[in-house]
Image 1 (spheres, helix red, strand yellow):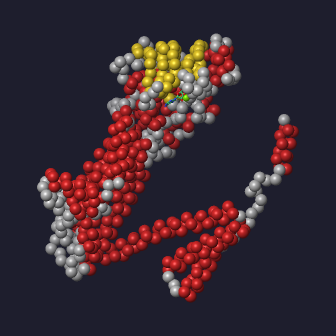
Image 2: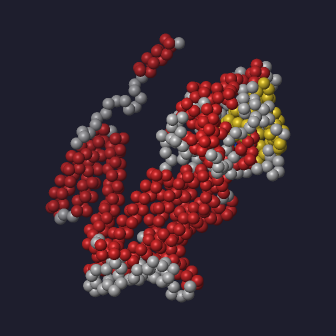
Image 3: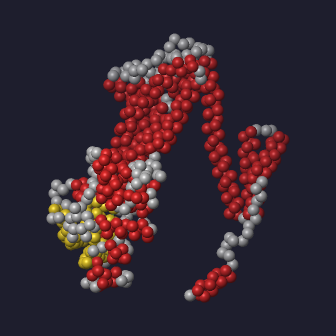
Length: 259
Length: 360
Ligand SMILES: Nc1ncnc2c1ncn2[C@@H]1O[C@H](COP(=O)(O)OP(=O)(O)O)[C@@H](O)[C@H]1O
Ligand SMILES: [Mg+2]
């Protein structure tokens, strides 16, 4: 578990609109990489192209190479469904399945794929995933209750438990805390620190303190103007990006000087 | 800083209150019932002088009350409140107007239908019955069988069409299907009946009358309703749930089957039930495609069958001699039909409640 990701000259389109241009990025296994940058610069677009969720949108497509431990994810014959089993995703807004109990939400990846498992094996997996998401103690007495009855922060951790239950190599998170209160945010940040023992994590965040707190590496995306494509300006160790970035644009952004 | 703020607050409170803070008058609580009673008395007295009629009395009372309340409220409470009161009266009257025919229909059907609402009606057919007695057992069986067959054909077709349109359809084909579904929604029911007659004349031969032809006619009417209802329900399933499922490595077809449809099943099921309720009372297509018989038949693929709407229609339109037993049976058939539709509506609510996603 925990694989490397390499983007090589990645161009990402919505129909004919080039949203992200020429991304070259190496992400080391079992690290946390934060993606920062102004709104609309293509962070989500790039993140969603990593597990091929991008192409779910009609007309959306990708050019270039994206490798997971050297294997081209966009190569001919690669099934996007298989890619998504290896690269999990947590969304901005918690989205547990409303028809399922907490228990079923955790093992949704297996249930929805009708993968047969013994009862004690599923019980174990549910407990392990919920413990992994720091949610076990809060929900262990109401596993049969609907997931939508939890608080926002708990729902988000439930979604993380659901994502790690399928044992992916990589975990993508698109602003996972932006809908949460500060305490739930802290809980998720602690969790990210634990998860990087096992997973490669890429997190989009608007919050620069958060990037500084949780990530080992930071990539700064920028956009020159509306209608122009977003680009990766630079990527480096987080402390370098926040103390002595190479590019002027990065320095302006991290120090709060815009435009 | 603090001094600055308090100073600014002082300035604000020095300003006159913007617009509406001045205390306004208010009509007393009894103004509405009192005004209504007073208008009724006045209109009643005037009508007593020139000749009484219930319709004129009600309309006159409401108009006088509305005008009086508006004027009084305008004097005391100001124009915004007055308009509010006027519109409240108009909306309530419109509601009353809409409810009158409903209550009247229910009252008529129940009072006339109760006469023959007895064991014999539910136990016997019209075989060999002239005049008194007899029942609509055969028509109830026919209605249930033909509608069930129609539902059996329409639900899969309608459901799958809706799934295609919402989850897969793009481009010309989807547009064309949507267009034809729209057109089908507007087909008059008699046309559906004639279509079924033409189809079965072609398949079986001229003069063919069979229950299944009725089912086909009802399907033509039901499919677009099912498509529409299901489409609406599938559309309101948030895209986030589909994406959550995709992101777990679940293929699209499984996502539709196990996430999208279960999430919307409550709405789909009640939509389908209402579609059934909608076609179960159709008369014209069944009249031409199925005809009527006096005997009990459980086989929709052979010969004429009786159905409640056609039974009611023909008993009423061409009664025998004496007329009364025929008319009574017609009203009871109508009552039974209303009860079936009502049960279906209740069922739809129950289904919606049972399947609805729960929280807590
Ligand atoms: N579904 C879509 N269809 C077309 N354009 C989109 C879509 N989603 C995002 N975009 C465009 O792609 C660009 C990047 O958006 P996004 O990746 O959401 O930015 P970020 O996450 O950095 O705020 C924006 O110009 C946005 O308008
Ligand atoms: Mg975004």
